[in-house]
Amino acid sequence: QNNQSLKGKKVIVSAAGTREPIDPVRYISNRSSGKMGYAIATEAASRGAEVVLVSGITNIKAPENVKLIKVESAREMQKHIEEHFADCDITIMSAAVSDYRVKEVASQKIKKSDEVMTIELVKNPDILKGLGEKKSDKQYLVGFAAETQNVEEYAKGKLQRKNLDMIVANDVSQAGAGFNVDTNIAKIITCDGEIKQAPLMQKTELAKLILDTIEEKMNK
Ligand code: C5P
Image 1 (cartoon, rainbow, N blue to C red):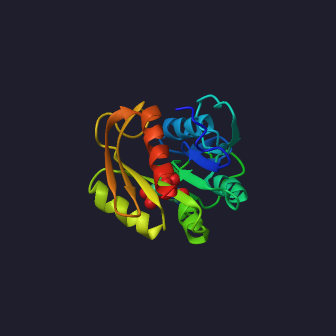
Image 2 (cartoon, helix red, strand yellow):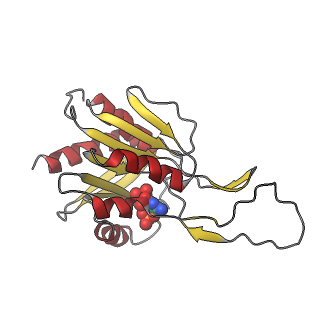
Image 3 (cartoon, rainbow, N blue to C red):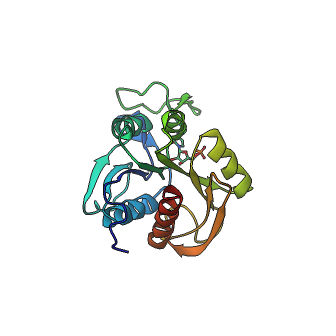
């Protein structure tokens, strides 16, 4: 699709996993590849949108015609997204944000000592929930939900709790869905109650379906 249907629109996409430091050489992270978010950013740019891609850790190369901001921690990701949010039309949070961070990051490499060691964690801000609280009626906000059970029910709960316009839910326990693969099996649930069940497909194709659905709903 090369119809410039998103020309004049500003789109923020977050992608990949965040990395929370423990000490100068260690961190806590997750298995998110960033493939879904990079596919969405690439597709939005090809439709003419001004795209800001706020990316956690991945080795995917920068898409063309996209402003790429690379971050590590959840709080860094939040800062950059919020900087761009005010005049943004569509925000798609596909990043796997760490729910917790290390309470006190050690300034020196932690030495091995006792048999058992404990690291204290504190909750990270929920970036998406914060955006849901301040978005205007004209701004379209999309979240992702990776579940291993009760996919639809949990996803609908998140859509409401975080005041979203759409949630893309997948069952990460199914083969071919979720983290670190090129394909996904997703349900696209919108705030009007509509549910589109997408079959197993390439993330590049799912990106098109997600953006088609956003455009359809925004143009209503
Ligand atoms: O509640 P849960 O983490 O499953 O919600 C997933 C959605 O919330 C994703 O869109 C993810 O990017 C976003 N999220 C966030 N900040 C967090 C945790 C999740 O923006 N701290």
